[in-house]
Image 1 (cartoon, rainbow, N blue to C red):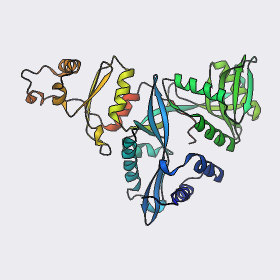
Image 2: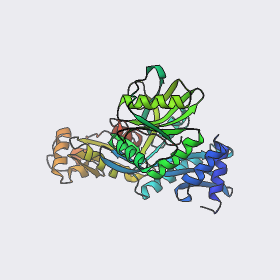
Image 3: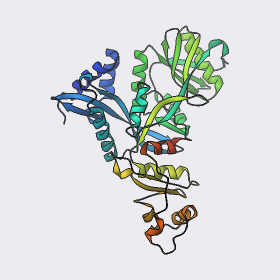
Length: 370
């Protein structure tokens, strides 16, 4: 159900649920929100729960998948604990599947929401930690040319896009998306610093002042020296002695973002392609929102296969699959399905599957206006 005032109703709900500035809300609803990406639950003739499905692409070792970022998930306080968000997420997952999306991802606003979203098939795959760095510890390259700007031009975008695509697994931003992000950065009093050497860009930071520090919202640089030089420039501009930035590498990382499989067939096909030497088999039976994700899955020689059960897999005629299954579970003497009854294929919940597929990819995500 939709009405002509849905945008204004969702905006009112946002104001009721989040503590964002009027300027940010106006930016979001003028540049991010559309009725086409909005999902809503109505009760008593009004929107009581809503979220937006913002389209993104995620790169995976040279491959790219279509995904959707869940933003603004909220329920009117007067209607909470009635199952509205559960229904909204279920409806959203079904719509994402219909739109041929492979993955849904989000950033829980509070730690307790990690357990909440896990009930709907999500699992933490983005991990990070904050690092603080003092000005005195920076290694600055004085030969760099560093310019400050509050807009993204084509050259900067091309550099950022190329660098982001080189990351093993990363959420990619379009030019339009970067432009909206810059509007958000400007609202916070920030800017971007662009480092170049011999007129070739070699680093970019997105920075905003926070109290007596500089918060680096994203840093892409060719070297540690370029990164430190950009940090030093930002500290100089904002009269700060410390920068704080997020890293997705190292030890003692904490959960940052979560994801859920939307189309396991298609996602596993991509995963098999980037892992041609891997063999894997597992069974899924608990995806109530998207039952098409249930069944027996086999990855072998860069290909993925989906069967109803182990019987169908053995009887598929795929020689390599049957050979690998035989190594694991034994050979069928007479081809009868009764021989397969003792076989117990490892069963994964749908939220464990996403962890399985992304565990060694160390996904990167930044500039989500969270």
